[in-house]
Length: 304
Length: 304
Image (cartoon, rainbow over all chains, first blue to last red; front, side, top):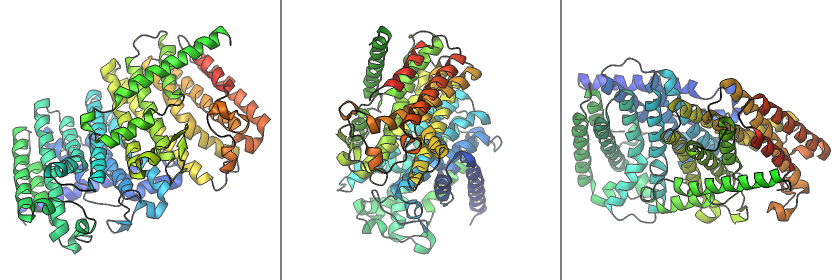
């Protein structure tokens, strides 16, 4: 690994640790929540993962501002988006949805706490995410900026965002035939939360609306590239490194990029998207875009 | 009926109509949402009910402000709380929860759209509620006030609010033995959204924090009284008027106020709570509290 790769890895793991320690303290106070409900919420929050979305909030705020100080507001928003991501996994795993028994090697929420509690825990995580996002105003962010972020969060994670992508995915299981359809699903199911993360960070860093457009484009394209790499790894990845079985998409009859356009074309689309994403980011003229650019390359070249 | 009762009924139906016509236009634009998902959201939003929570937002804003002008922001918040209420019913009716096939005489959401879509429609309604609440700032409300409202909405409908009440209710089905336990469930399952409604209205009407406390107490007690009356009507109400079968609580083995303390004591608790609520409201010194006071009496004396 090159020096900059080592530094990026260090950054990723320290940012993820920061978010994780903050997540532990971000649930509503113990006395105010029924014990089992709080336990179910904490269980899935602690279940790990790359913490990619919250890391993008931090990295984007730092890129826009040019330094790593005053992280308070960004950390609150980072925890908010991780809660939204976590709730979506809890609901996605339910018997009526994907019916998964395991996630990241651990039993899924409803396997441990029962279906009803898993539904409620998901609802509570989603709701609490908005409390956390709004709380950024007590941590140094301006009220108008925080409201922009709350509106973005609702739009990008709701019916015209992530939930819309999931609904389209569910209906598409009866047979996706075009790349446009698959792109729609990926854009909303995966990209939208990443678009939220990078734009929320940029908003906290005070960028103007023109730059914000470019940052959003970066997020959209990185998100798509990320999902294509996911599809590819599911076919040719190392089960040990991935921590899950490969070929799960094929087994589930899922339509993916490699399925639709072949492996080689998928790789080339992913590379093109990553490059276009980096161009968009450069056009945003952030103070210190380097780390976001490195993150884009890192995601494309990851093996898990 | 007395003149003031006629006027209150007129107010209630015109406020409910206003909210309903606004709700129709408040979903994200058609092109941005998968058709089935939008249909499932609209289906439950249109399924009716008393629209009590949104009416409380409007009435409370008008009581605080002293007139019925500038309703724009209050209407947005009113729609937001109705969306939260609606999502909670959709999720509550799911097979893993109460497993209800009908609500207000119509097939429940999952009976029409399937379980997976009902879960997603509920998620999307909850998420969109925060978009609507935040949008109040484009309708004349101040950013700080809107953020207070967003925080309240998340707290009162989340893990330490309504969802917490539902979780406690679910666990309590194994056997509630004390009035305190039952009160906890009712306070969160039912009162919290009413507390939100009256305090959000009061915030939009510009009341100070001391008055806000009193308004919250009004909401808490009215909510409890409302729930006790629900329990009573389930035992002695007129099925025709209620539009649903009576004795459903007994059939479902639910612990209620009449079950725990008897019918007479339940009635006397309800009356005491209503009177205390009205006292609290008077202490808040709103400009025109009359209609809220009438609403309190109306709820206690309703037969459906």
